[in-house]
Image (tube, rainbow, N blue to C red; front, side, top):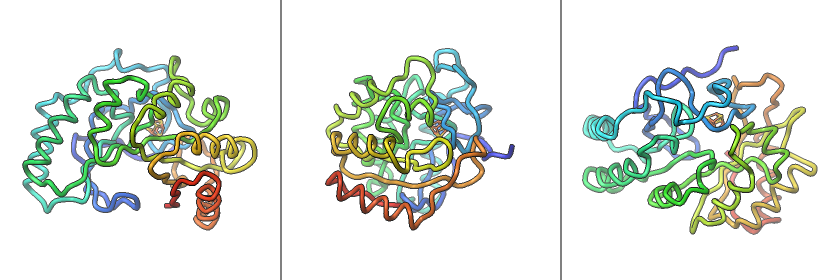
Length: 252
Ligand code: SF4
């Protein structure tokens, strides 16, 4: 099955993101395989190396390489709207993620203070205090929450052993400010309606994030039975979610 090619370096883009505008990506993961604590049914990078945990992997870029790459990219082009930690899997898996955030922020402050710093994270390590502290230093901590109950979470996100719904919710609840990103999918496994959707709404109301971004898949994805939710349906879903939770919800 054809899926998106992995990012081949630390810096990629700039890409024109619907959510972030002109965004320069920072990939902290290895470049030869996806490295993630989830194996989402809709993943654009295809299936994960099942059961893989960061401790078993090498190939992360060093702190020095990351800083040199970001500095070089910022000096060679007009400043982007965002510098975004994202890439070939879950960015917080880098063993030196907290230090990298501190140093990239320092670099941003020195070179282009108007550029915002964001992360697109799957939330799987947000129960760890050092990860929470690091993520909080970013302007836009954008954290995934596709499900409001453990069963839907297991079906859609397919986490590695040890990553639980309960730990993620506790971690997100401990964040002083968080932006939630939710992929809405239809098909045999879905979170767009019924009990799964109601549970997601209740969890959002309970977490009360700063805002919520909802979007649907762009083909190709890991599982062919995943069905895209139309923009019109997403917009209606966002309006309803906003009414039900009291949190600003926007469809992309
Ligand atoms: S969290 Fe992101 S990278 Fe990881 S499996 Fe899900 S979609 Fe893919």
